[in-house]
Length: 243
Figure 1 (cartoon, rainbow, N blue to C red):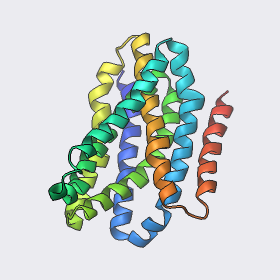
Figure 2 (cartoon, one colour):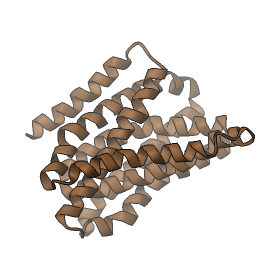
Figure 3 (cartoon, one colour):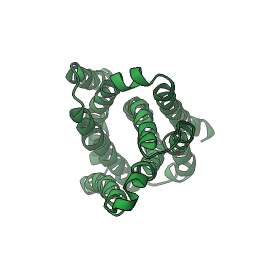
């Protein structure tokens, strides 16, 4: 069990390092980071969406007839979480600027914690499922680090405080989620594992289709479609080669 634990935990540590790299780049190489964020976002979205629909969702469906219900629940959970965090704070004019920084910290922190749980779940299903999920998730950590830092700056935080808060919320929470969840996930039965995998898939689809792609569409770049298509091709190639 110890060796099995280190596989998802190492993946979550890698994700944290990639997130930290994104924060570092936008902190110290801001012009380059701003120019290329859209490409990272599009590529990551292509991988996440493809991996979810072509492998993770079919795997969950094959394990339980109730998996579609949990798939929808996972998607809606992420949606309602984001709506709740913004609707009850950002609508107050006196706290609008404050919310720009702190509300995303809550949402991103929870999302990154869920990422850690997803590592535990997918690697428990199979090594290949875990690797596929990890590829898409690690790729989206770099732009997430950039975006988190920029949101802190927009919220009025100093560059130093924005760096620290973005690191804690977007990077540290991922391995923490794996550390907390793995002892439980590794002991659960197949039907429950299917439900958790479907919930994870719903969360991944939300991140890719609802969180990443719309952001890319708001900031269209010349080669953004190529970056998206490359992400899809990479994911499909990995899945086909496995088959």
